Image 1 (cartoon, rainbow, N blue to C red):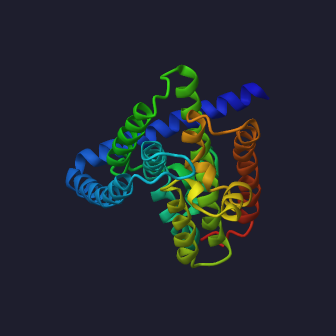
Image 2: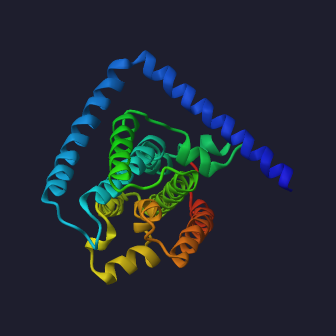
Image 3: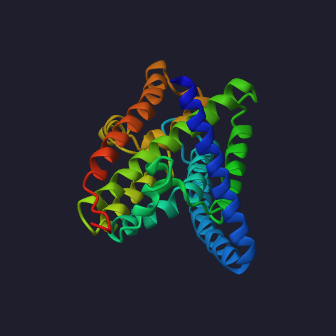
Amino acid sequence: MLRIMIKELHKHILLYFLFIRRYIISQMEYRGNFFSFLILEILILISKLLYVVVIYRTGVDIDGLPPDAILMFTGTFFIISAIYGSLFLHNFYTFQGLVSDGELDLYMTKPVSLQFMATMSKVDFAAFIPNMTAGIILVMKGWKAMNIPIEWFNILGYIGFIFIGVIIMYCILLFPQLLAFWTTKTRAINEITSALSNFNVMPMMIYKKWMQRLGTFVVPIFLITNFAPLFVLDRLNHFYIWWCIFVPILSLLLIRIFWNLAIKKYNSASS
């Protein structure tokens, strides 16, 4: 059983690298398209950074967190946004068309996971480059200013919580996409759900206690970007660490169950 799982995982990883290779080849052929999107992403990033500069210059502490620590939260938000924008955004944006136009039929003929093909077959690095660069710079600046030791424990812990945040974001933002199997219009719901991620630009401590609990235990949006910097700042107790490990496992299980329910509602183009 374990050998089969490892073999399937290896197959999907190789396939994903083929998706990336296909993207690079296509962008080399249409470079103007890539650079136009890159410039657009840079302009959007600049507008967000202006907001960060204003907040930073006010010098206001948030629940004992100085402006330099807040930079780590904003930087982590940019890092997660870079990963989401490059790996998932385009897939989610076109998902409704796959369902309503019957294009999902083609993916069903492939000897790989249908969920993998439908939600991870497209990549786009135009959003990745500027957001990841800005995110890393902000995190490094905050890390240095807060005198956080550069140790493997902190680095691996931070990366681990980033990985957890990506999984949780994937599950939360995929959920409204699956409503396309029941209704043909999901754009409004998608916009509302995507807007929830903007709550992570600043530390969750700026919100009221009930909102913090809601975003931690009910719809765990605050786990996406808050817990990585909180970990290296030594602001996480053992309960929250274990909760953050448990949530992505539960999220993957629930989204898989909902996926299987949703796919049963799919009407093939040939039917």
